[in-house]
Length: 109
Image 1 (cartoon, rainbow, N blue to C red):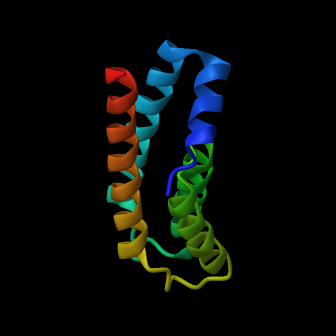
Image 2: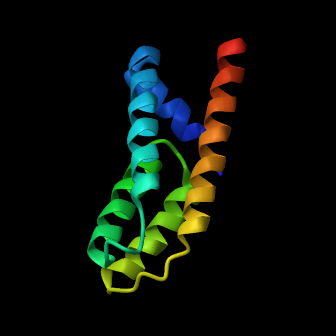
């Protein structure tokens, strides 16, 4: 679900303090986008939101979530709004929970 090697790599590249800021910003922006994604806005809006989420998710190693966003983005790019947004949202919530739990374990060690 999460590529912990990517998390470690990013943390090493930018340091603990900046990493915490990146995670906080990502979660705020992703939470907003998750609440916003809908088929109602049309394919172009859906494609843009899923593209944003995919890119941010890849940076933090949310592999499964990024894959679902990529598939939805691909569909929306051809005007198809049939992506399973419930699965996208559920994957985000699972990934977010795993990240936060993993950070708590690292912080406690």
